[in-house]
Image (cartoon, rainbow over all chains, first blue to last red; front, side, top):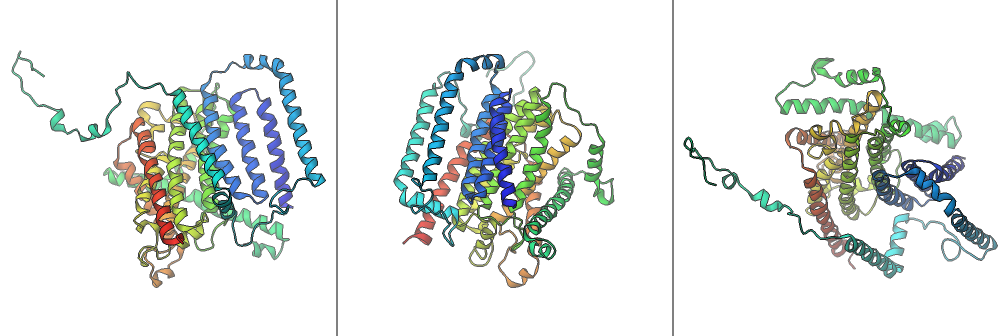
Length: 205
Length: 347
């Protein structure tokens, strides 16, 4: 029963916060609702026994991606009225995308109901292997059967990262970056001179 | 504990009641510990600065933190009129809740743990990555310059150091072969030459402990990395606009986080509830005593650092995190996994 209560709580919170993401007036509030939605989705994953995926969802999306979202949204000076005015113009496009997504969902669910799709392991059952935790199973799959695809995904991400840096890098021509080792190695004897100039003489540096 | 309540209640209700009792059994002593640890912190600084520290309220000033708490409790909660009220009030609650939630997976003795889950360490990483939200929310909702700057600094700092903390934890997990904190502690039994307990005595993991300790200071925004509360630049940082209980919640959450980091140091590198030396008579001392002794030792180191070291500059902080700790911990992940590949898993 606790399981059912937890499921309905998490599911309700995911849907409610997802609705609030698109309806709230303030973009910062939207991002905060989005974080709540991520968090409750992680709760749902814990309920189906995928605790590793749930933790990764929280670490990656809530802990890193959403923080950057929040950063950007907070720093931007957004004109809410202008943001709203585009709503009517983009409305048909949004509806079209929504209909396509809904159709795909219905098709997928229908295929699953009709028995054309089998989820989980090849024979359609998804029971955990005895004596092997979630993490070990995923690790064995990723680094065994799907090693090539996994490494390829890593390389694609690396290329994307290098590309993003190369596109935004402007070079530093006018800057004089500090040399930390040089600074640390500097001793008082090289930096300070004690002199005792006579009256009206001044000193040469 | 579930069996104890199952005498009178159906199993599910017994489980619920037992869990609530467990939460209270951790949270209430933790609050008490935070109050006493603030007192200890002030006494250590005072001793290092050749002062007396709090010595008026109660014997040796022991009740000072409770007096402060009472004072704060009786003050008026002020919400600035230009602040974003909902988020402004939510921010300290988030900080406080997140600081408490991470304690759910901490093992205090063999089998004494609220949630013995097999992703314990990942859970702690996930929860500690949430603590940045309390700060960012407070900084933004205050609608004031200094809290906002402070929140930006805090967020950048915490994200930077979380990366290297993650890699250090990977090293420990590789060696222990599990994410479960209780199993990690058990894996350290007799680890150093069969005599001493703890990964601290491992040549490959010792440098990681040093990096972890410094990263913990940065993660909890203690001196020398307390740029978010740099008085000369930012007044009191993200707490500037807060008063009364909302301020106290930040304070409690901050110290609960510091205690959590001390506990992680003890559990991951110093053998948790195991005695320091693997010698039979030492096991008669209850494990919780060893664990608390280790936590107090690390807390002493935290306040020692605070009383001795000057503050870093912000660019130095970022340089240390990204250019020194990150490459270093990456190299050690490779070294540790390579070593284990040859010795343990190599076929």
